[in-house]
Length: 242
Image (tube, rainbow, N blue to C red):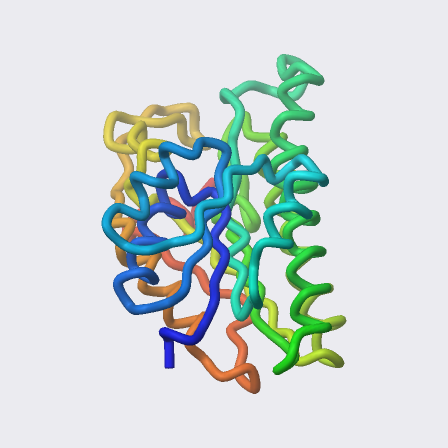
């Protein structure tokens, strides 16, 4: 059945997006890979046939053009995101804030908007939108105002999509990920600031476990939904953070 299903994965050129794309391709899904760098998308796809959609998720015209190339859409993994260097709010430039919010909030909105419209109007109707939240959608790390604000916004998006989507057979869920070992998370293995002011190494997990969790969510029938899933390295300082 998976060979007839279509998924679009944003941020597919690296990290969680790359790992997830490769798993879906190996499982026989028709996968469209979106990211800013065409060469990185091609590297993700490897020998698998995939639709490569070089685009910036924060650019409305590029998002619309990318979605217009899809024959249908069963699942959107709304994954693209960036962070900013750790700093207190008074040390964060407006440019840094705008860069994070343009990708993590506006980009999520634009892709969810295009997916919702497509799923609502296609036949058979419906689909699933899975947003990449974060542990930071629940609790912050020190010096993370732009990223934490953006991920709290993603939670609001997920909840509203889940409500509005019911009438159109659209399910919406969120996966909140903690310490998956990617390039972005490599610093956890060297030591990162803690709430008590110390620097500590944190446990990490193989990013494949995240990809498998997304595949599970995506494979459910549309009558079933996982509104929120948290997956994390067991011993990371989340339960009890602070």
